[in-house]
Amino acid sequence: MSLVPEGPTARGAVPHPDVHTYDEVNRDVLRALETPGKGWWALLAVAAAGVVLFFSAWGWQLYKGIGVSGLNSPVGWGVYITTFVFWVGIAHSGTLISAILFLFRSPWRQSIYRAAEAMTVFAVMTAGLFPLIHVGRLWHAYWLIPYPNSRFLWPNFKSPLVWDVFAITTYFTVSATFFYLGAIPDIAAARDRATGLRKKLYQVISLGWRGTDSQWHHFGKAYIFLAALATPLVLSVHSVVSWDFAMAIVPGWHATIFAPYFVAGAIFSGVAMVITLVVPIRKIFGLEAYLTTKHFDAMAKLCLLTSLIVLYAYLSEFFLAWYSGEEIERTAFWNRLFGDYWWATWTMLVCNGFVPIMLWFRRIRHSIPALFVISIFINIGMWFERYVIVVTSLHHEYEPFAWGIYRPSLTEMALMVGSFCWFGFWFLLFTRLLPPIAIAELKEVLPAPTRKKTGEAY
Amino acid sequence: MDNAAGLLASYEYLDSTVDAIKALKKAGFEKIKAYAPYPEHHIEHALGYGQSPVRVWTLVGGLTGTATGFALTTWTSIDWPLVVGGKPIVSIPAYIIIAFEMTILFGALATIIGLFVLSRLPSIKPPVVYDPEFSSGRYGVYVEGSRQRLEEARQIMNEQQPIELREGELDD
Image (cartoon, rainbow over all chains, first blue to last red):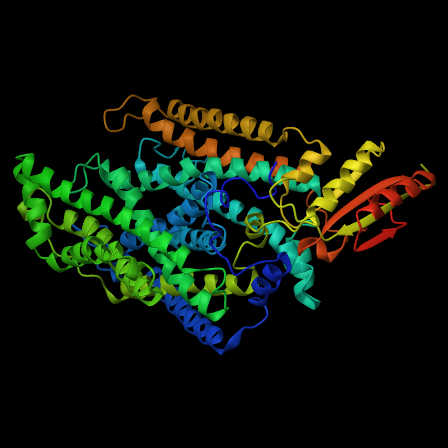
């Protein structure tokens, strides 16, 4: 039997060669919880201001009514649904990195997945608000939940919108559970070093974890099962989101490619967001030894792969619109490229299809500033992708008399911008309260200390 | 056991830990507990672990979820039959999605509950036998037995050169 765990290290070099001992991991990672720094406070202030903006805009809409948004016939879905799909998509790569790459025993997952999982939880928290904002009369939102009521009515389970309620709530519950479970041993590590009030907090939320053999034994199995459950879940959630569109007969929506196309797009945007978030964390907390160019290279490759799938989906949509010979379908896609919203479509094509071509070059994949800039382009591009799908399809349906133009109102823009701040606010709190890198799992890929120095032969 | 007591050794090296556990097992000690900063399958091997029963929780939870999903959708459709979109009143393909999501939800929650039950979490009261170093870089071995037998255990544990050897405490 070998002392080196099978899998990750067996297949190649450890992705973080400058980390040697277990104590080092605790020291470096837990240091992130100690030093707030001025930069962090400044970011938190900006995020908090944005959260105020977000809730003021929402409050304004609740007070005045949904009329303060630009939503009207024929475009009844706009920035709110766009932003909802965007944030659900962002969430996906967190689960991909934490669950799917865990099942595949990927060697570069350990130092990234905690941040990616936190991103998932907060992104679903953000996304989940948008259907509530979108329904306008928030006080009726509970009608979506099946419960015995005096009207004797039940939700329509044949509707993709109700599927969505189930998919998103399940996704939030499972990803939050998975995130918390994985963090318990690390919270215990933080508890053992903390003092004062923080120690009390960690004592409670670490649930009394001690790292005994039986705890690790059951923990390991439970973790594998959760990963195995989260894997089909993540693929299902964005498929269900895509069916919100594909089940309708709107030209530009009614396509069987939608589910895989959305899932690929979700992972694409999510990995880009992980890069956007991890670059500053690495810098601010001095975690260069843990997040090496190897990690960024792997994420960039994942971006490249999914960008190719997304580009393929774009092109096949255009091709099939032409090949179908269907006048309305052809017009819908011609309108996307050269109609009123041509700028949105071209932004999407350039950001998602062409900018990632640069990732073919190793030099760019190894340059962290370049990746950061590219990831921002992808974030923008993926927001516009959803805007294009939602708005250009609705504004130009079958009947010419029902065509119309949609312009997002200030309230909608404030809610969209505010959602980024709301997300950022939680993420910033996370970096200070929970170890941003998975301590215990990182130790699994470090060689275990042995007295006999036999290493392999044990 | 009135005169029972415990011994807690902390080790710096994995092989010392595993050897100590194996020697204690060989000497016939039954109440052995090991601490590690990460899941270490060598320790689990030495202690002779089999399959974790967590998997039964997952399976039962998942199947309950599937049944609940189909039952909820079917029953509510029959409770107030309403033709929507020309589809049958009980539209199985559409309900698969609800049943699938509930399978995952119930399966995941049952897994967590199973884990908590099996590993006795949460336990908020401060641990009696513990060392903060166990979450950092040290391994621990704890053994319980009568005072006479513990002398033997002490010898076995000392053979592997522990960093520290504490006695007298009984684990909860």
